[in-house]
Image (tube, rainbow, N blue to C red; front, side, top):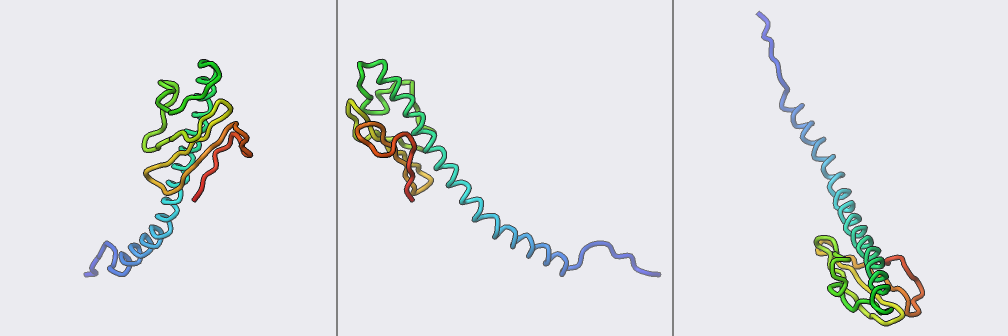
Length: 125
């Protein structure tokens, strides 16, 4: 009477485990890079939102910019895990930086005050 064995051999299972390991080794670094890009995009978005809040503050407060993000009240709130700090603030412009707890990169922006690049956040590695 012939034996009817069903199932996988040990070699077949080992080959599948090796293939899954190779795929995981390729995918994990790609995923880490994607997360960092998301943090940088969030920092840039927060700085662009700060532009809008500062211009609204400037319009409402006798042509002066807010000296801190706390002065903006409910008009501005940074994303979770991101710290936005206003640097130099004058009547003609301001500068700000954004940092995330999850990446070493820092983004900054400068508006007015004789800045050479205005309106687009610049991120450094």
